[in-house]
Image (tube, rainbow, N blue to C red; front, side, top):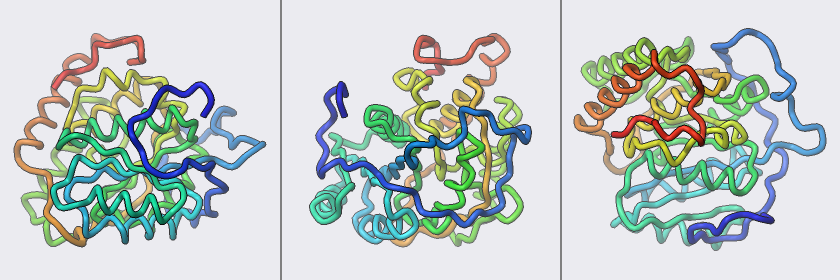
Length: 298
């Protein structure tokens, strides 16, 4: 890309993404008025360019089949793997996929730096390289790729589409989610919705598609949430710059292999971040942009 800043080390050849597959629309729940601003209309001269980001740590068993499943439901998407020096060899799997499949890229990081910093890295990559959409899903199959077309179908009307467990038709089909964890998830989402004024019901899930031109309006360097609390923070910041947010139902499933990364400490940090953002909310009358570096620090 002409004029782009130097990139982190990546593998593979960058190729323009062709037309996205024709989505099979799911039930799209809009949190906005039923209007279609001109700036959300598809560009008349070319199809949207999509990159799917996978933030990985110890996902060697899942990565290869997941990338191939992503390509099944989004055949023309580029795929970006951001690996935190996984000791199980996930990075080597990513390198092999780069060699085998055009449009697959990998960023190798020095260590386990957290979901939030990896997600920000992927967003910066999408902005630098002129993608239209960036879609993120967990790298363990808990977000089934079969729902990707439903998220893409909503992007004509929205700037952010959330794969939601908590709208009609969505749900959780996971043995890992016992009654305690389900209650905790519901509580965090309700807490975020009330304190941050978010219109969406699923604010802690990472299965999302973003319009890259709107992400470019955010101060991505000012996002300080390193872990899972990033999910609430970035949604709050998107809302503050006027992003239109929609949800489509997905079913959260058990991971195929490996162990979950979330723990009680992550939950506590998320509650702290939401509280700090909520406290600052009444006093912040202008959007949080790249020129505003007063984002919450956690």
